[in-house]
Image (cartoon, rainbow, N blue to C red; front, side):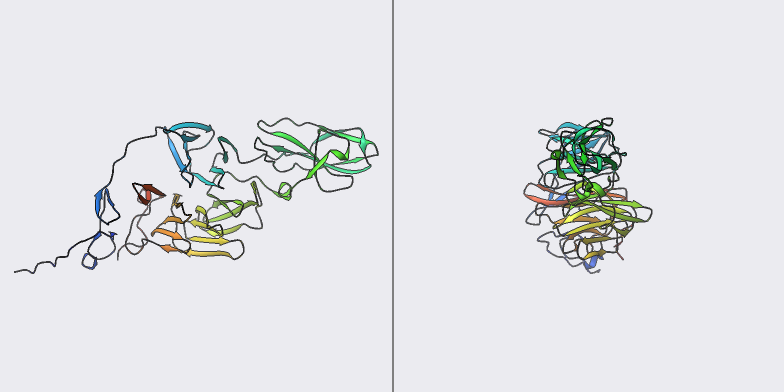
Length: 393
């Protein structure tokens, strides 16, 4: 008679394992777990169903603040906040249906979209970019109380939130004693106020000229312009973003390589494009702040962390799919989906590589969801996206 297969008592279920040979699996490991949950006693129960709570046509992006207090969406090219009993309140239009990336600084929400970048502050949304005037101001010489000398004048724009953009090119003016300047206003830009700037006689430091556009007395000069307003650049729209170390960081990809660029400190709308930028192999698919000390960078070819002092360190030689493949829990721990499963940082750990081989998907989204007393890490993938790097041998 054929020998019977040995039996084993299963007292608990420990999750998926589709990489081991069946004979090598431990009791309680599963090769498939469709529509089930594991409870806190490691018992299997049927997954709860769901019903539609939000109706938006052409929904292309959905994101919640890490404190789970606010929920935002992009649908049919418009930016919405979902309030109350899933009521969609439109905040802005003019977005594309391509990938949208999000992050926040604890107060403002940053939205990166290929059509336009936005900031949500309170219940108001406005463009991230404060446009820089392309030409310096025109003027006429008038009577005044200015001492003789050479003056520099310029203008800038200020938005409804009080953010000032970069200064225009300067115009050089030579004045005699007891003269002044009448700056001719430029054509207004919708949504922005024009602010006038000038130096002291023979000076180089631009200062706000109050009571402009007439500048006739040195007593009108106020605070000096910040360095970022001389040297900052408008950011390129779209691409992965992260708020880290007081700066807004962006991932820009061209061909088979990516550039990570940073704004000036605390000037999230004015980028340096220089000193703190760095290159990484592959197309950049995600950025995230990790414990305020490191910036996590995911690309199609690997995952890195960057520290402003110690530089770039590679965590993996396998990539991260496009989409929203990075999330964090309430304690700030960062989780991310890769072509070898789910990982955590820092310290770095691949949580699923040894037991799970799953097609990574051409696009992926992950999120930590608390429900019925459980905290679950959910991963959604679109299309198979090929064979996982850690397929069973």
